[in-house]
Image 1 (cartoon, rainbow, N blue to C red):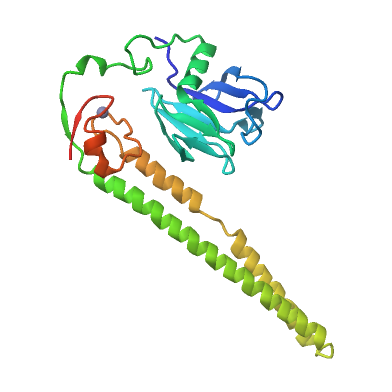
Image 2 (image 1 turned 60 degrees about the horizontal axis):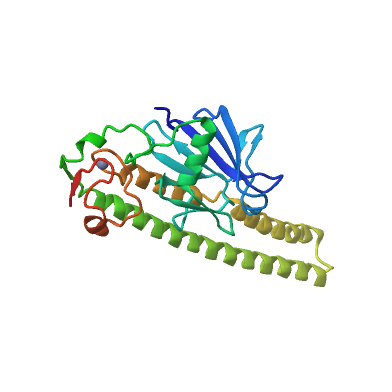
Length: 281
Ligand SMILES: [Zn+2]
């Protein structure tokens, strides 16, 4: 059965009529279909445009589907706003039941709807009946009765690393912000002081004037350097999320467990929803 495996779905706004605009491609970005959805003006301009450019396809966000049907969403630009089930994300695994919200005004669309639009555009049959796995590899369907037990205690450390990492990052960002603000205040104060001195003592030696002129430039230069210095917090957050997405998965089949805290797994997810393995905590 044909599926959406190894496809990408670029999601954004059509700039002509402000409808939802999807471009479905293969995993190498070779274009398959261009689709519009919804009524004109149903998507406002806090959702980025989908369009082809010299550097490939640009869009608000992109869903990437791997060969096993696992879906990952990526926010395509830092300034784009993408929520998955209420959490703002840069990148994360998706469930078919997830709800996307795009842009500041939170244009809502279900992942399932996007998949349906893409399947229809490519002429792929809807997975029907009781088959809940979206028509992807269904090797799990015949062994619902088996109860594999699988150790899952290591997930506690994965969760804690993720959780502590994000808190640490938030603290660091706050410290950086405070430092920058203090430096800016110091710099502008110092600059004004020097300029003030220069204007009040016009009888200074030419050499001293040169020094006093050079100093504020140096300070301002340092401040600009500090402000422009590469902010790696987004990369760091991305790294924390990637590690979490890679490791916080069913130890048996690799299905992502989502953002369920480790303490809540025994009550909320005692077994894998895909392969049905029972977790041992
Ligand atoms: Zn599993």
